[in-house]
Length: 253
Picture 1: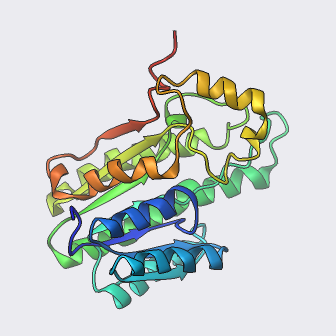
Picture 2: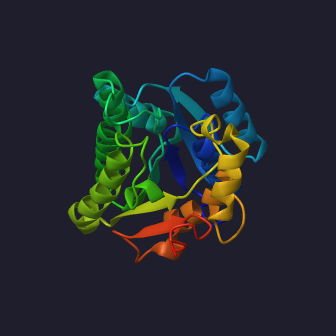
């Protein structure tokens, strides 16, 4: 019950990491508001899982690429659950594409969802926390891709590096309000984003072979690190980052 009595907001929470984190936070005692873009059934089932745990859950639809969505999400979450203690920026896309013929629309959409959307979501959540006056925790799902490149991710990796940089800067800006801001760097986690890419058996086996722990990650692997950063156990942790990658990053030799 590390989050007992807290209210957590999670973007992109109808599937994958966001869904696992939302339900995991509820398991640790939190009430949870979920943002989602299109998957109504997924969002509703996540809320049902949260309610089974005896917590309050609410799903609020909106495209994070629209700055107004951030204000709406926070306002509706507060109306439903009363406050914001923890904000988890998870929403993101990665439409794999080669660099030399990258469509402008693909590049701009990725930037708008992953980076612009995060900026305005974090800003809206932070303003609510400042108004409440008793601090809070903001966590960004960055990526191992913030640290290494990807041939078909030239539009994606800069957004993840940008998320980490954003957390470093807002950690400074918001420290005086007792708001902690940190990044998580997931490695290769099996989600809808990469399921087609990893359907290639040889590629999947290659990826698994690079990971010291011997397996690809599951969305649930992000629950513990998120709960830690959200909880009072991390009350002196801000501007930090944590790799959650099974050791992939260090295995470069």
